[in-house]
Image (cartoon, rainbow, N blue to C red; front, side, top):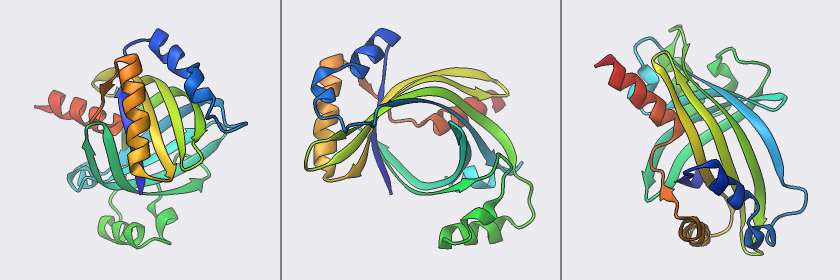
Length: 206
């Protein structure tokens, strides 16, 4: 399960202050700080069979590697996002649900869709700065994303910060988030990049 907090970052100056925050850097895991370009394509059938079932199928280029992911049962409240997720390395950006056949969910989804064609209807392209935070009782990853959501109807900017729980207690995650939010006046983000893209498409198809 993926568990993370999301916040809107108002501008680049705030993003840079978060990136250089001394209190966070004191808890930084050595060698974990990096910058990476992430380009993702989201796939569905022409009838939006996955979106109707609140399932997201994504293939993302992460630096030099490709990773496919299925996400479902998503919930968000006060910036806290939780969802089931399966991720597997793949060779490229051609949709192929058989890569998830080792999981019960992936196999069921492949059988349900049958030979229905999957097409890319949404993309996200952003630059991510990230490092891991080791508190001694928990391990978290702080990411700062800047880029855009792309659909056939136009684009929306991405400017947000995420704190993902790798190990430890969810309450400690919430406390880290509260401190970051208060220090930089951040607004919680309850809508994922994928859901923002879906909303753009729905609004333009009305």
